[in-house]
Amino acid sequence: TNKIAIAIDGPAAAGKSTVAKKVARYLEYIYIDTGAMYRSLTYKALQKEIDLENENKLFELLKQTTIDLKQGKESQKVFLDGEDVTTDIRTDVVTNNVSVVAKHSSVRKEMVARQQFLAQKRQVVMDGRDIGTHVIPNAEVKIFLIASVEERALRRHKENIDKGYPSELEKLKKEIEKRDQLDSEREAAPLIKADDAIEIDTTSLSIDDVVDRILGVVEKVK
Ligand code: C5P
Image (cartoon, rainbow, N blue to C red; front, side):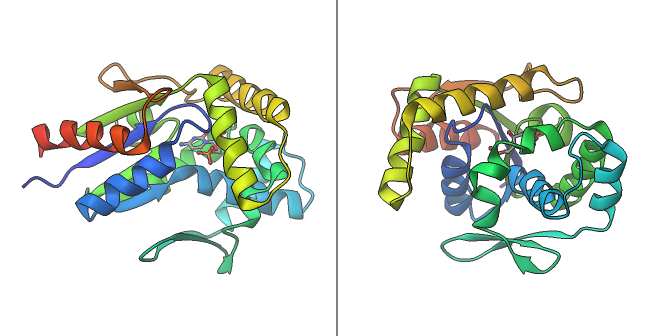
């Protein structure tokens, strides 16, 4: 069978990582969460109190930063300069600032180069915003996942409640809308569906439904 690359893009909280992980596990492929890379840089910049609008400083910072995505049996861990930041990069302050960091073209160029290196052997499922358009434009399978903002906010809300985190549905909705807007309207590699991507609206689908659909597409090309 062919070794392929699967690109999964889409707006915030559309279920990309949940689905990508399951597809990767099924195919015994590597899962690469590119959002975690932008989140890690954002976390480090916030800690160092770097102005997130300062593109040069962020680019310099990134050049001195290692980000490793380590895949365990059950979970993925993210290491920033050797330190486990898996949970630190999911806080609200990181989530609500990451799109500012991710808009800078020099930062993106370096991230894309790192991501392309990780994908060079194929057998990857990579999720993000620009995977099908910029990172792996020749990916054999491209998926664009969407869902209504109400549904996405509700899923996050339920997740938070399950984990025992405080959560406000309306606030989540506003934050997701804001992030989508920043990601879609930026100049450098904005969130957009690649012409050859297959769009799946997950609003009324279960996780397994979405996984099955993607595996169906994979079967045809593999
Ligand atoms: O996927 P996740 O929601 O963790 O991504 C966090 C943020 O990182 C996105 O809102 C976006 O600003 C940025 N990002 C990006 N390009 C990617 C992945 C993420 O710009 N390929």
